[in-house]
Image (cartoon, rainbow, N blue to C red; front, side, top):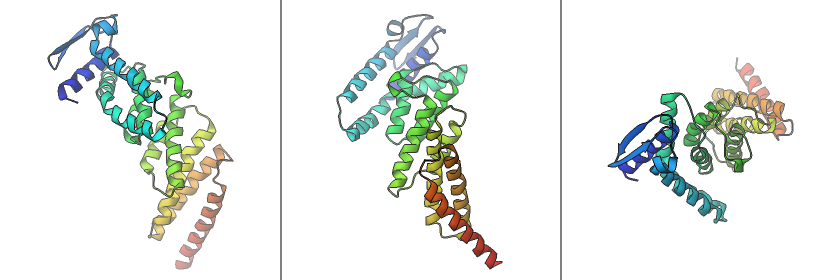
Length: 255
């Protein structure tokens, strides 16, 4: 994407997010105008073009049956909407107001789908701050979707023995802490955090550090079980309790 096009589409998003302003912006030699109360298609042609592109991409995704192929297609499409999202975030920062936008909320979900968790959480913070609705097709609140999709991705990776970024999980928990969601969903976040702590503890060679990691794991898994007794952490908690007792005995013997 050219610099001129990126600038033009970022400005189109800013104009779309602030319809009460009368503005004229020259981007890459093309004038974009939006009159107060005007029609977006007539007054903001760049925004109309972006929406047409988005609708076409959504239709293209519907025709793809393979989950992997859908994810690959989303990964290719995401950069096309980055300037639009940047423009909306910039306007919100300047005005203190966020406006509902189907493209931005969809890109948040696509970033989760493609494993761009840092990018997803950046958009998620905006969505949750301004309580922006998700498109009806997602059938969940924004907070629930963000927490559950990232937790599920982590649990899948950890179930295969792979690592999952602990900071992403902790940021997700902190970001959604005030959001109303089913206890089962919030339990998934703490379960994933606890399992990642266990994975790190098992790989740790320093006994003291491993003890801290296991203690953190026990706390997180305890929170998960408190929220949802059948979330599948009982065996891990029992194993941790045995390990922590052994660690304590070893430390006492050493003194």
